[in-house]
Length: 414
Image (cartoon, rainbow, N blue to C red; front, side, top):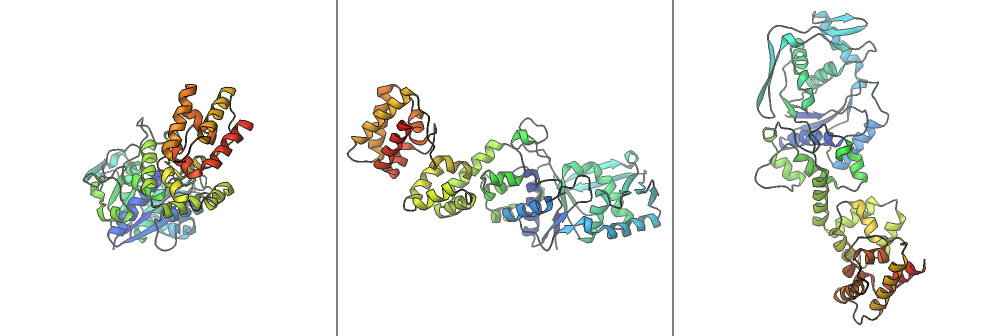
């Protein structure tokens, strides 16, 4: 049975790049009817951040990347690592120095693997390697020892991780061999870069997955977009459900070249997902997103009869759930004297309309703009308080003449 793991360090929130690693491991497990485990690698106590483990688990649950069993926490397995460390010392393959235990590398020959990403041979001259610490003086193992012991005991194969660990391949292969264990297959995922081809950072729009959630991104869009950062499923397929990803995914189709994270592309894809979402589901997502915002929840309740019409319009403008609020909740504008004059003309034009339809509303708007040689954004400002928003003729038809005139009057009389 295929067993894979996602092994984040609780040094902060789960970064968006880590989502891809978790997703690829999950897809491999599900496609092969295998198991997907979560392992918390918290042996670096200097970098440990309280609450990170809980947030990582919450994010994976939100993404619906369900792991099997309970999380394995390395700090709860210290006796196990010390026991295995002693075995290496007894075998003469490790030694104590300055209160720590060091692994004795073999400097003869070469160490190599065939990486599942790109089906490429990665090889190192052992003469370039130096002895390294496997158990620190504080009693905690280093990453090198802990993950090798755990991957063996958990029967992890393949080991799916970031390409930043390629330079550590000799250390890990030597440790497996020193214990007399089978070396698992490795898949080193390409490092995600920003548009300027530098290391991905917040200035590129990258941030923890939990922040994307707070900013109104849909889990389906995040998973879809992150899946495509390095993986080519073939054909022209760009939008995929998780089940389609499971069916199509293969590590051999992951490119070893570093992909580019483009926040604009993610925003576009998220907007497309919003537009494809049925109104009933979208309403539920919006209600959940704004559960602590009384103004939005009241708006949805007060407009229960027309909410589907409003959502149809909102979909055309939204890239994230967070943009819904400013599309439907107005604010009081501060109008200049010229803008107040435009508002009065608009009110007069609207009052003369016989049949309150989007076509007649649009005609009145154009008449007002032509009379004052003004731009359309001023009408948005007068009616909504913003300079853009839902398509005005359609949204005002839904709102009704009386409420529209009341809004304009309120704007003038501020």
